[in-house]
Image (cartoon, rainbow, N blue to C red; front, side):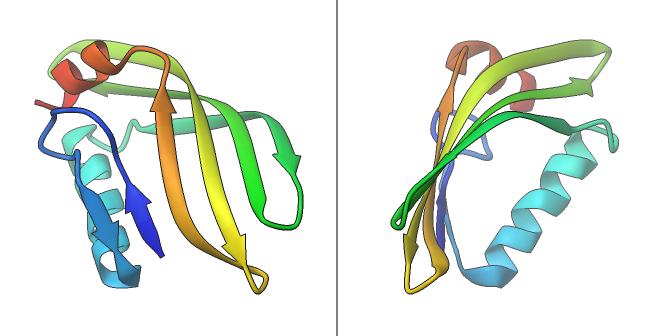
Length: 98
């Protein structure tokens, strides 16, 4: 699986494979002091795609952040093969993680 994180923060890169993805989530939890949360608001699916409408939030360095996001997963042979994240406020998220 390839996990694409948009933007210009230190977290913005394409992560490939299980090990890199585990490292990404570990870094997110480290930077947020464990405060990172994802609330699923709706899920849309078909045979080749899963789209999740969600709200993501975190705290870092005394700042609180929350943003609507769209997460799109491509599916092949019953497995997720690619993930793309679309931000409601990319600039604010970049500032939080930078």
